[in-house]
Structure formats: C-alpha cells, structure tokens
Amino acid sequence: MESNTTPNNRLKIILVITLVLLFGTGFYTLNLYNSNIETQEQLIAEKELVLKDLNNMAAQYDIAIDNNDVANNKLIQARERIEGLMDSLKISDNNVRSLWRYKKKFLDLQDEMKELMLENNTLKEENSMLTNTLDSTKVQLNDRIVYNDSLLNQNTQLATIVRDASVLSAVSLKGLGVIIRSSGKLIPTERASRADELKICYTVPKNKLVTTGEKDFFVQILDPKNNILGENKQINFEEKILNYSLSSKFNYTGKNLDICEFVKPRGKKFEKGRYIVNIFDEAILVSSSQFMLK
Image (cartoon, rainbow, N blue to C red; front, side):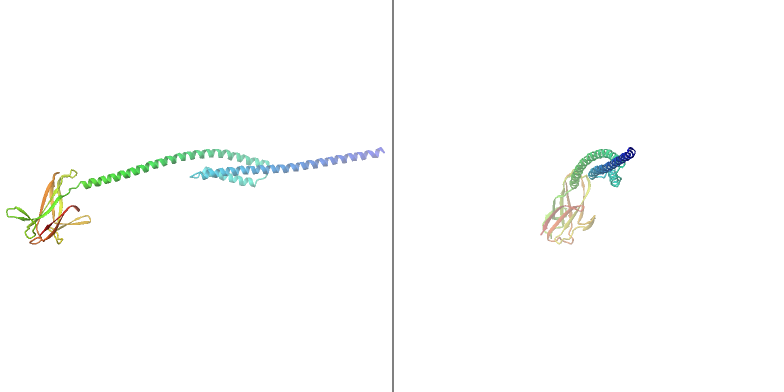
C-alpha cells in the first residue's frame, strides 16, 4: 500500500508545482503586458508634451519674426529646424531611447532660442534707437530745408529788389512844341502849324545803386496817327522788338540830370492831336507822358 501511494503523492506534488509555475508565469506575463501598455501610454503622453512644447516654441518664433521689420535669418532658420524636429518626432518610434534623443534636441533648441531672442531684442532696441535718431535727423533736415528754402526765397526777393532798384528812371517827363528863332531862342507853342520841332525833356534822378558812366535811353514819340516820329529805328531785346524815335545818350555822374531831346515832323508840319512819349531802358518802359498840339 505504501509503495503505491508514494508515487501518487510525488505526481501530485509535481502537478502542483507545475500549476504554480504556470500560474506565476501567466501572472508575470500579464503584469509585463500591462506594464508595457502603461509604458507605451506614458511614452505617447511624453511625446505629446514634447510636441506641444515645440509648437509653443515655434509660435514664439513666429511672433518674433512678425515683429521684425526686416526678417532675421537666424530666427527663420531656427523656426525651420523646429518644424523639421516636429515632423520627425511625429513618425518616430515610441520608445525610451528615441524619446530621450528628441528631448535632448528640444533642450538644445530651447537654449538656442533663449540666445536668439536675447540677440533679437537687442537688435530691436538698437533699430528703435537708430529709427528715432533717423527720425530726429529727418526732422532737423526738413527744418533745415525749409529754412534754406525760406532763405533762398528771401535772397531771391532781395536780389530782385536790388536788381529793380539798380536801374535809372526818368521822371518829370514833358513834351511840347517849340518855335525856333534864327537866334536859337525857343518859344513854346501848342499850335501844330507853328511848331518847328518837339522838345522832349525829362530828369534822371540820382541812384546810389547805379554805377556812373555812359548810359542810354530810348525815346519813342507817337503822333496822333500812331506814327513813330524821328529816326524810327528798330532794336531787338531777346524776344522783344522796340521801335524808337531816338537814342538819348548821357553821362550819368551820380547826380540828378536834366535831359532834353528834339524831334522834327515827318513832313512839313506836325499833325494836330495827342502825342505820346515813352522812355525805355532797353526793353523796360521807365516813363510815359502825353501832350496836345492844336
């Protein structure tokens, strides 16, 4: 009896041990499977966090690039590296080694971003100071241009005034008919039939702005029919043509100067009516007067 029971007991013991081992192996395998699932979930969660951090970093670069009037190439290149790392991370294996490699790259990019942002802020401050300086310089330049334009206008006006003032004028212009006696005596007359010549007199007032020396006015006398008496010559001044009766030459000495000129009739006698006398300094009319002969 004992010899039959002993092998059975051994068999039972072996069976129990086998069951225990199988149960333990299954339990370990189950735990390992569950652990692998948890590890995968943690890796995926870590991966999402890294992607989120990379997205935030890319967004900061976008803001920095948009705020730059002139795009900073270093910022653009760093932004492109982040995009490349994000694309690579999305398709990477979910294992510890791979994730750690990407985390290390992320930390390197984070350190790079701190340096680039600091450098970018420094550049922005320098650009702002330069812009303010340029704006201030521009304002000063505009003020200087306005001042120079004003000064130029004043100088031009002054030059015009001086130019206009630096000419001789003719005042007290008067014309009349005269009878010339054999003795040379002149007798004024208003009768056209009795006048031998027309006497044209005027005064050149002194002008300190005019240099002394030989001067020349042109006297134009129109009879009642608008005929030009005297020499009736023609002279050109640029685009203007002047017909004149005589050239009145005189020596200006810087003092008042009285001048008289004489003109004979076109025919035997003068016409009755109104006579007009004009005096020109080159093409500029400086004086005009009229008188009547009956």
